Image (cartoon, rainbow, N blue to C red; front, side, top):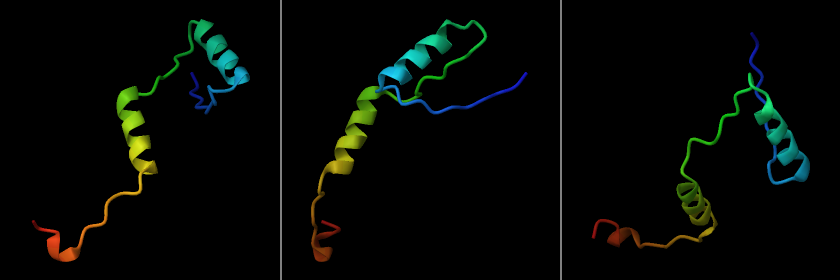
Length: 61
């Protein structure tokens, strides 16, 4: 038995078709993301934000 890991962009039509095809095979195991989609959205949103500047003297207040 061999294990292959591939990365597929599921946002493209070809990527979606490939994943759908692989799911139809009985002996292929497709791993879904272990992360909660809502959590992933929050992380991506926080990466885009500018953040907040805090004075060093106020750091421990």
